[in-house]
Length: 130
Image (cartoon, rainbow, N blue to C red; front, side, top):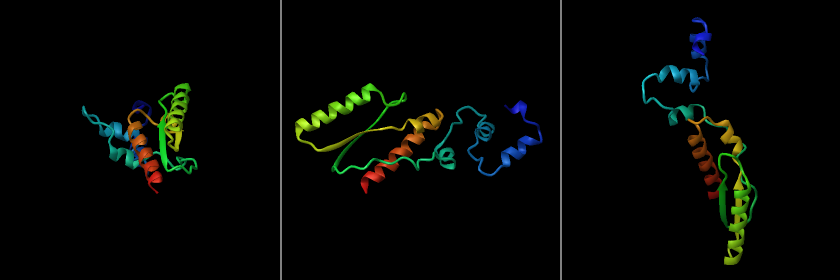
């Protein structure tokens, strides 16, 4: 990628406001071994979690299940059905929900995905605490 940029264009690109988490800038900064994407890099350009909301529910107890990398599938539906059946047998009134977070998984790079997952968990945890 660097070979395609002219010598005059590269400095202007790196000075562009809002590109502090730019992968090109990070690549130039992180030439030494062991330099990795950090929480500070994520906080400089966090994922947009504005659409991450829980559905309405009235139950006091909640069970949230986050599907795997491939998205919600039969195993997630089976798990949800088993939990609901066991809760019913135990007399527990609990909201059981498979949270679909595939959009954020697909949008995240390998280096950002753990930070995105943590931020999503914090947001939903705070919503549940209210």
